[in-house]
Length: 207
Image (cartoon, rainbow, N blue to C red; front, side):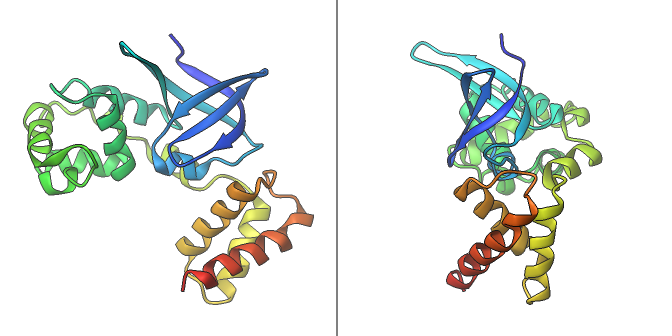
């Protein structure tokens, strides 16, 4: 079994990341928030879980051990497979997912594509009272995932905020530009102005 990958991000698309480990590329399906935190060309450590089915072997990956534990715990519910578990983690961060189960908020869980209200109620019924709080990422894990240390990217975000954009909008735009245009990370000084220009153009188009 493959439990972890430590390599360089070679490619990212809407649902998967390709991690190059010493010349071997591993395609990993990941939650959307984790994919948004990765950058092509940057180093990454991914916690993984392998699913073996009759017609496919699929590797699922997470940036924190807590997310991986939650992914495995969700699959203990009858009828919940790895695809639905991943859909849940793409819809709700682990801490919100735990809270929704404890609060019996089937509506929040049912927002995950492929689940439905009956599936949400089954998760609540089978996991409430036994949900492992350690499955949710710690505060430090969550912060590390959402705010990768990159002084160059931070400068671009600050520049956009000085022009009146909200921090979250600026952060998302900068991450998308770096990912889509293949900029190296941490962002070098000479690329800051190019990323700022592209991010600003992208945000203006979205108005």
